[in-house]
Image (tube, rainbow, N blue to C red; front, side, top):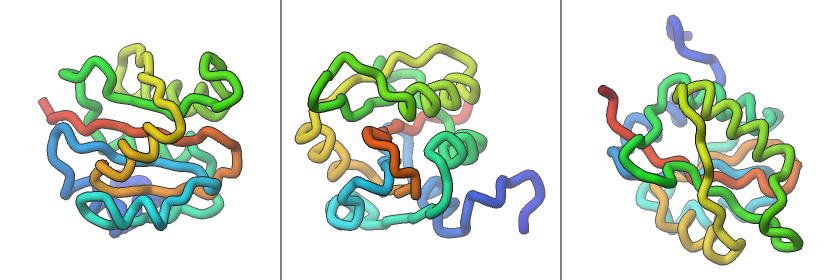
Length: 147
């Protein structure tokens, strides 16, 4: 156990986050996502699984140590619902609220169609798959610098 580190942040997850450079994308996805397949294509080829957690709980812990890229106009991108790309699912609202709380500023996510999200995720650094079963809990979160 480490002092002041959320216990959700496992050693493997901390390694993944610490190994990323600014501009790298962390892929955070729900239980429905083909994470094992996508993770094989990422830079680290790592899949970290956090079963039994909601997306917002996992992202709250991650954002406690993760600097959001403030140079990029879209540091957060989400998968848009196929049936209604303008709809914002509850899981996305909850996670965006956690990211905004941690970053201290509003976040307006970029929206990617399903196939585009999969391509962008495969180009990410690594994948964190959460046990949350709510659909469209799929995020790309770009790492910034600590200032």
